Length: 259
Ligand code: SAH
Image (cartoon, rainbow, N blue to C red; front, side, top):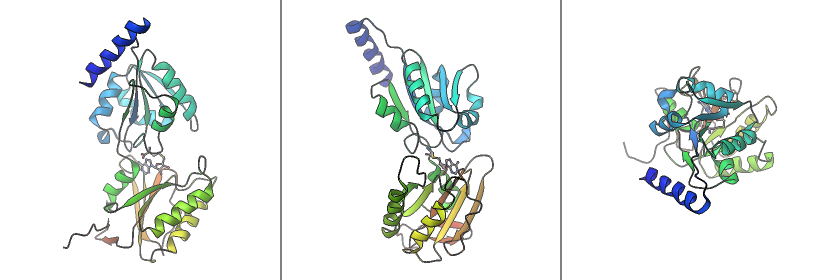
């Protein structure tokens, strides 16, 4: 059905403008990093693509799917260049631009749509880091929860701190993305200090590094005993709400069922 609409659109364009548009841009979330956790739709779109665009490390994660394809990859902070290139190439080729996790969560979908919105751009969702980490931990996100990125590249630190405070006050389970980098080593510690004003010291907190991909490591502790030593940019940190607890090594946030 969608394919049919797509063909009609291309034909209409050729009638009115004499210019057949053959291109397509898939904005793909590849999931946490192992091919078995990608969606079938994401895999099919990559198979269909002539060109795949992405950050070097993400391209490496899907290498087995890329035989015979043209690759355009750049290093960190090359997001704008990658998006513009992908849009350009998609004028007459089938192109996939890939993000890890979900492309709509700190991924490429936003910038692509800011630059262009039309029928030829399709966003394909993926398993985001908080869901991947939650599956490893047990069921920590079972009630209302939110994502906060501690990266100040796009967001002023004062606003990040305000969001951490309000999420803590609102008793949300909190997933911290981009939790710690060498350029801002104290933000995580300072965020935990804010959260501690609203949560008791026994509240569970977990670090999951490389969730559902090679190098996975998990540490569950409490706000009182939390040590941020192992946390880096390959990790996500999840802080429980006032009802969360740990049982037999699993981090659980009850939803309200009486058991
Ligand atoms: N679009 C991605 C997020 C990109 S921001 C998504 O939806 O998951 C990058 C941050 O995501 C990292 O610093 C880390 O905090 C988190 N992250 C991404 N993949 C992860 C994984 N497999 N394990 C743990 N954290 C991950």
